[in-house]
Image 1 (cartoon, each protein chain N blue to C red):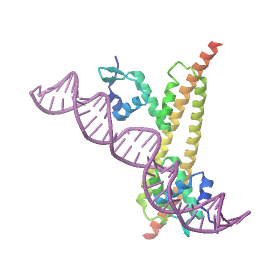
Image 2 (cartoon, rainbow over the protein chains, first blue to last red):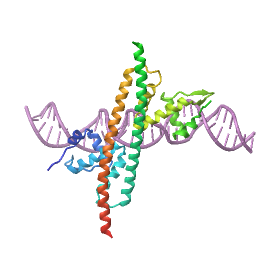
Image 3 (cartoon, protein in one colour):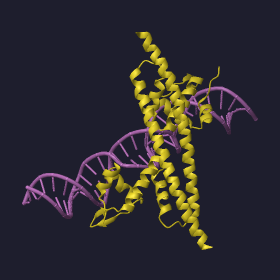
Image 4 (cartoon, rainbow over the protein chains, first blue to last red):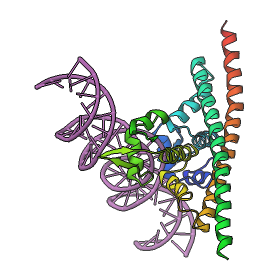
Length: 124
Length: 124
DNA sequence: GCTTACCTTGACGTTAACGTAAAGCTAAGT
DNA sequence: ACTTAGCTTTACGTTAACGTCAAGGTAAGC
């Protein structure tokens, strides 16, 4: 029986136990109980991984929840799947824009650095 | 005299006038006044563009302010420039991770979609 | 039996980035 | 004179995602 405690999970993914309980409170996780302690399985661990991945991409917890529910009930609802594929497409577009923005800034910072170094060299 | 009103700017960049005033309140913008009305120049417009670009990348307003100050005083401080190049590097790494995360999800959603379509085809 | 470590719930606090009235000035059109 | 449109400041409200006590239960080791 490969089960995990809440702090096992917290350590592994570098989040606080408070955060994990919060995800449960929001309905993203439902671990079993041994007495009143939470017991996490490999599936819960996968779910948490999904949550954190979703967050990194910029999804809200509510959106992460939708994402998770997409995997659970053996795929009942086709419409939700499409709306979510749409959301992912949006994120990709946003990522593309971010890439452009960063490249833009990089260029401007490069010239700023040049000006700065020129000014410094004149001080010598 | 190519000057802009606050709602000109708001329209052009699709932000509210409240947001623009907030940026000023936080010290990111300092437009001139005609009477008590704000008057924006092309330079202010560029600054706002920088702010919004910074935000898209994920910088906080405080960080955006640092960014702006990098261009202003004819480049005085070498140290700040380096710390900011560092921050940009961090954002690029984060972007890379986001790309990976999105690819990951895309794969998983692809298989989820397959399962879903299988299930649907069996219903026929 | 006492300490230590880890777990629980409950509830209030926090931060960023604005939203949203409230209350009023001003210039333009009718 | 009246309405409309756009501008102003002041100030309280909002949302997400936790942080941070408070107060206590439990199991292990000495």
